[in-house]
Amino acid sequence: SFILYTSNPSHTNSSSSQFAFKYYCLFQRWDRQKMSKVVVVGDLNVGKTCLINRFCKDVFERDYKATIGVDFEIERFEISGVPFSLQIWDTAGQEKFKCIASAYYRGAHVIITVFDMADIKSLDHTHQWLEEALRENDPDSCFIFLVGTKSDLLSREERLRTEKDAIKIATEMKAEFWAVSSKTGENVQEFFFRVAALSFEKCILRDMENGLPATIGQGDSISKHKCKSLSALGH
Ligand SMILES: Nc1nc2c(ncn2[C@@H]2O[C@H](COP(=O)(O)OP(=O)(O)OP(=O)(O)O)[C@@H](O)[C@H]2O)c(=O)[nH]1
Ligand SMILES: [Mg+2]
Image (tube, rainbow, N blue to C red; front, side, top):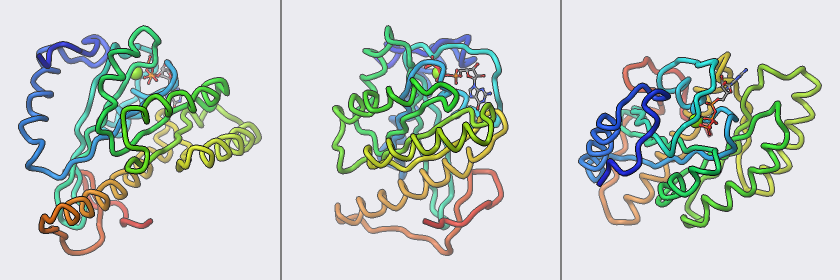
């Protein structure tokens, strides 16, 4: 039944059977690994897929190819020596796919609401996106982020003005605001490391509340799997 919703093969370069296989593997590992679910929402064309691809694959695609329904990536980290994964769900911004995409909102630990810093209308729509994602989740147990993309397209003055507006909205949403560029890579890794650090901490606390022994390793490092340790878990 996991073949029901597939991503656009031309966009993700993966066939529907590959999507099904990824989905199957995800559920095989579900209980065995520390893993948090991240859902990325926002208007079409704001740069959700590019943001995920910059972080997970270190690539940037200039041409717009709409996401059809949903797709996801799993990114593995090592935090204080403990393996940890983020399941990052990339949803379609196009109205006609909302119904498919919203079926995947449930069980999110992190909601990333994305807007295009060069298109202020998309910032106005973030409240609505967040509301819809929270409808499927417990608002008290989700971390919320507001991410402005395409910072490379703005002049210094425009950027300052947009950031001021975004911080106001982020405060209303109880979200943390980040400005990023998937084109230049500015802040992308820093942002996802922050998401991973907060989710990991929550995951450990959840385990402790459930009476599971908390395995906490040595040190305070966080690194992407197969990458050298890049920054400390500072928050
Ligand atoms: N200059 C610049 N362009 C970007 C950036 N991020 C994305 N884009 C461009 O914006 C367009 C849309 O990017 P996508 O990531 O496909 O947008 P999306 O939010 O996934 O869109 P949907 O899948 O339809 O919801 C593409 O043409 C990208 O090249 C960025 O940081 N800077
Ligand atoms: Mg997309």
